Length: 246
Ligand SMILES: [Zn+2]
Image (cartoon, rainbow, N blue to C red; front, top):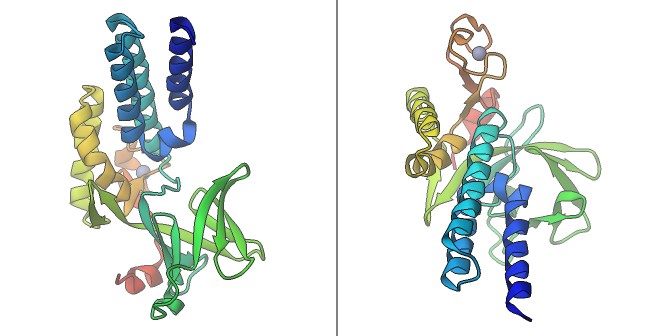
């Protein structure tokens, strides 16, 4: 392989990562840092010059901010790095959890011989859940799990690992409001450090942007859906709030 072929191949790999929509939306921070590391290595090895590196990094940054803005208005997306509570749609107690794509049913939690009950995979059809002990399967669309027999479950973000530590969802509306404002200002000034640090907790919180007024100044004040708050609880189910002990 000559220099030009090697260069073309490596840039193609970088390009494939840049275009990986699922990776970008599931973890924008990891997506961006993977691209920056890859261009830095290409420059180090002399395959690209500093101007090419700069241009590639500009594209990686643009893709990052695009994802951040998109996720602000539509955060319902399954993420392997999260822990979810699995609840029947329409009410009822939790049946289990999915953490790092591994399903554990509450009913079998005392059975130490069973390491897990199922796993979430991505195949050509999208996200699928496969039980380990039976042929039962389901598919995940947004944050709704639909089993082959038609039963449906809500996946509620409950915890998440951030830099090796597990955090639970923030339930205080004042803290949520503060995080929204900080991230908004940092997004406008393109301050990656601040956004990277706060965003994981913002997305995990029990609230989401109001889809009626979109938290827009001038519309929010008169919005009856969110009572002028600009945000609403992710799930209004009372039974969930009472049953989500752990
Ligand atoms: Zn509203």
